[in-house]
Image (cartoon, rainbow, N blue to C red):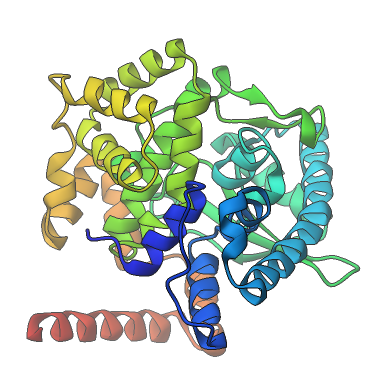
Length: 378
C-alpha cells in the first residue's frame, strides 16, 4: 500500500529526520496534520521530536504549540490512568486473578522511554478462561460496568468495561481470555505458555505483568493482520502500532529474536509476520528489523499463513471455522454466529433492548442480508 503524503511527513518526524514542513501557514493545514497524528496515535511522539530535534525547530510555532498542548493533556490523563491500572491489577491479584497486560499499556510501561509517549483507547488484560467470572465480579466491585461483550462462548473472546472516576475521567478496560477474536489467531498460543514467558512491569506495581517480548511482537503482528482482515483494510497500519513493532525488535535480545523465529515457524504465520514487519520497515527502517525480515524470509515456513492474507470473504470464513478445534466448539461457533447471546443482542441494539430477542435477531439478519445485496452490486 502506498504511503500518503501526510503519513510520509509523520514518519519523517518520528524518525527524527530533517523534515521540512510542506504545508501552508493556514490553520486548516495544521489541523489536518494534527488530525492525522491523532488518528495514528503519535501526537506525544511528535511533540517529543519537535522538542528534541534541532532541525525541526523551523516548523511553524503554532503547529508545534498545538501539538505540545495535546501531548500535555494526554500526559495528565496518563498519570491518572496509570494509578487506576495499578489499583485494578492489585485488586485482581488479591482475588487470585493474575492478569497480563496486552498490547498498548504493557508496551507503554515496558519498552517506551515514558508511558506518556504511547496513547491508547483502553487497557487490555489477559486472564485464564476459568477465572473469568471472578475477574468480572472484581471489576464490578471496583465500579466498572460492562459496555460490550462476546456474541457467544466461541464468537469473541473479550469483554469491554468502563468506569468514570470522581474527576470525570473515563477508564476503559478490555478483558481477554484469548489473544485475539480472530479464530485463526486465537488458538495459536496457550495461556500457560504466555504466563511462563511473562515479564514484570515494576512501574505499575508489584502485581503487574506483561507479555514477554517474543509474544508481544507476535501479537503486535497478528493484531495488525487481524485488524486489516476482519475490521477495515489499512486500519491495522496505524503508525503507533508499527512503531510498537520497531521498538520491540530494537529491545529484544538475540536469544529473544531466535525464540521469535521459532514461535513464528511453530504457529505457521511466517507470511503474516513478514508482511507486518515489511510495512514497519518501510516506515521505520532499522538494521535489526531488516535482518529479522531476511532471517524469516529464508525459512521454509516463510509462506505459511499466506492463504489467509489473500483469501476472499467466504474463503476467510471457512479458514476461520477450520481454525477452531473440532467438533463441538465448531458447531457451537456456527450456532452462535446465527443466534448470538441475548446479552450481546441487547447491547448491540440498546435503543431497542426492550423488544423481544426474536425481533432483534430478525433485524440483525435483515441488516446482514442488506449488506450482502449492496456488496453484490458493487
